[in-house]
Amino acid sequence: MPDDVTATTSAVETEPSTVDEQPTGLPDSSPEAKDEERVSVASQRQLIWWRFRRHKLAMAGAVVVLLFYLVAAFADFLATSDPLASDGQRSLLPPQSVHLFDGGLSPHVYGVRSERDPISLQRVYTVDPAQKIPVTLFARGYEYKFLGLFKTDRHIIGTNGVPSENALAFFGTDQQGRDLYSRLLVATRTSLLIGIAGVSLSIVVGVLLGGVSGYYGGVLDTIIQRLIEILRSIPIIPLWMGLAAAMPKGWSVQQVYFAMTLILSLIGWTELGRVVRGRMMQIRGEDFVTAAELVGSRPRRVIFVHMVPLFASHIIAATTLALPLMIVAETSLSFLGLGLRAPAISWGVMLQQAQNVQALALSPWLLFPVIPVILAILAFNFLGDGLRDAADPYDS
Image (cartoon, rainbow, N blue to C red):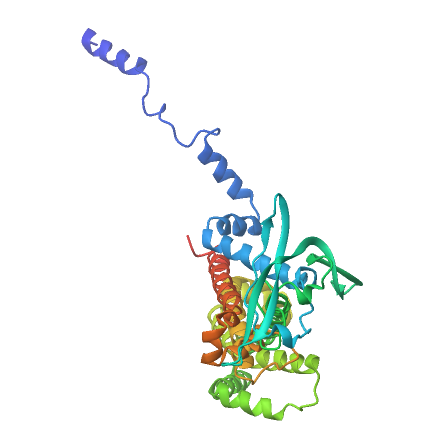
């Protein structure tokens, strides 16, 4: 063999391979490798939570919703006055300001004098700086049941020496002289609870009937779908006018509340039922459904254990969209006088006094209940978008 060929062959054999030295993957200590390893071993709940945290508006909506339900739970403790106590001498009192300093930290409000205008006969209020009413924390006030467990009269804010009903009105008073701030807190509890109760019943009915309709098909599917079409074809306002006329006048607030929740849920399940039915029909021919049926699983287990969890994101989206719709339905119907009635306290009942344009021109603070309605609807929608995106396995 010639010398040049031998030298070339030995050079090729001894030359280090550049291909073998190329990195084939990420180093074990790199942040990307650690993230991949963490995702590979994470549970479904952890994956949903990590994706949900990246949705800033959803996180903000979750915080607002949590604050709303905390207010609903501790409404009586946060209130300063009895929401049912009226005082004709304080009718349509403008919102009061709290002054924090008086030669030092000394929260107080000024006294208010009222008199009738001899021309317009309207009550006119004059602030009296000489009368200073101290504002304290954990003051005594009207008695209530804390979280429905035990009686107490402690409130987070109150006054010393003078009953809060006669001294404090952060948001002003209504036509009957009732404190709007305290009534707004109690109304938050009523409106949110009627929304969550109605949606809970709607979810149960919608998933149950929609699942049965989509899984079995046939005559049962036809009957359920015709029922949905009948319910969706009924005009809402005439329906509520008839229901308002049919409700006995002697019913208590609790009975009207229960009836309204039940009716809202029985009407609001139809859209979710159709969503569930469509998804059931789409996946009922899949192999895992057939396998579950072959091993002897009952239809109830096939529907609720194997099929429903696959489209949980759709149920979450429908639920979070139904919550603000329930709140708007209660508020608008009570505003029109077709829902809850006094002495019940809800956002819609409070807004009934804002129907008069002249009253709004003279007392714009009567529109304060609109603010929590808007905030609650936006918060629930943002929260629903974030939960839907986080729970959707096909969304990258």
